[in-house]
Length: 258
Image (tube, rainbow, N blue to C red; front, side, top):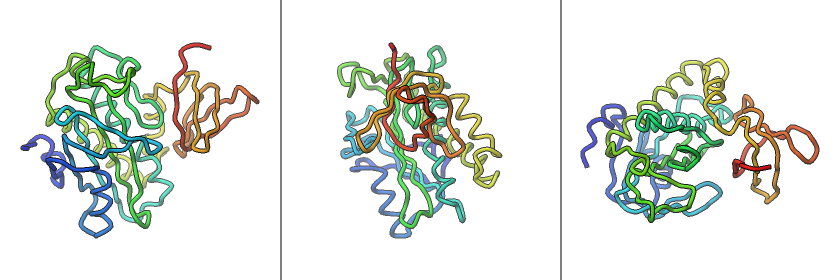
């Protein structure tokens, strides 16, 4: 596949006709020392993709793309890399917003992108061996028809009135992503000084919502999402005790009713 717009943004982008998981493949290449900062893999046929919390992620071949990018700035502390999933989500939200201009597009913490409350994109980030970098994986529903959607709360660009093609959509995402990474690294990977923290807070549709948070240990929090702290954690005021809970990982549901 020829991707002139996307490779112009990211010269180290490689297209794979089929792969189990772009994240896993890039993790393996990084472990073998075959990659460098901003190496990337993309496919429209990912056969063993994964979502958050280990969930299976399957999409019809040719109707989505999955892309993984290695972010490995020199001497990056692991704490700073924790912002990369949110940066990836912000980049995708901006890319989708540029393609679907008559709908509300928001970032759902930590890294889903929604159009009018329906999921069009999900991201999954993984540390490379030794914590020297992070791989940011993203999937975007391009031309999935309604009867092919994985859930009732999903959508695609086609269903929302946009048919940009993979190269245009991918290049929009990579442009936003690399720009935000450059902004972040230029400020010494400081989310506050770079302005990244404020921008993510401003564009995150979870803030101000009633939410249910399912934690990795199976516990649940019901409350109000108040902000995102300087470490990228969602801050929820717990209905049970009125205390602020700082959530580093969890599955968030926006609640429509009390």
